[in-house]
Length: 104
Image 1 (tube, one colour):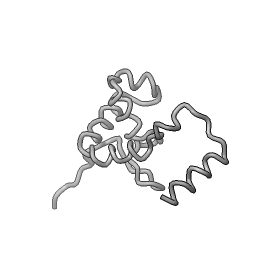
Image 2 (cartoon, helix red, strand yellow):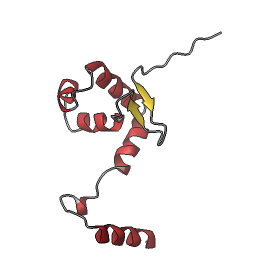
Image 3 (cartoon, one colour):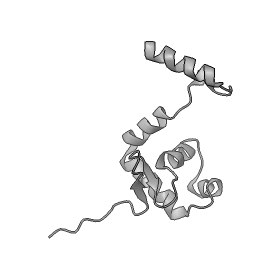
């Protein structure tokens, strides 16, 4: 009988969304990958998210390397559109934007 091992010791999927997260932290692999893609070194990432260990960050980056297409889709889906970056939305503006996008 073959033994199945988890290739990523610190990564699991969030039950509610299926998004990859660091075990017992709620920190998404996406968040770590985004910091890394912005130029942060793994040692700097643990300074930004101090409750993570360096080994967890490396495992998240390894998961990103193995599942880059999936994580890139999550990054894109969670990116704030350029036209509303730096603005403050009111509830009315948010509802108006949703109705315009559903009409398109």
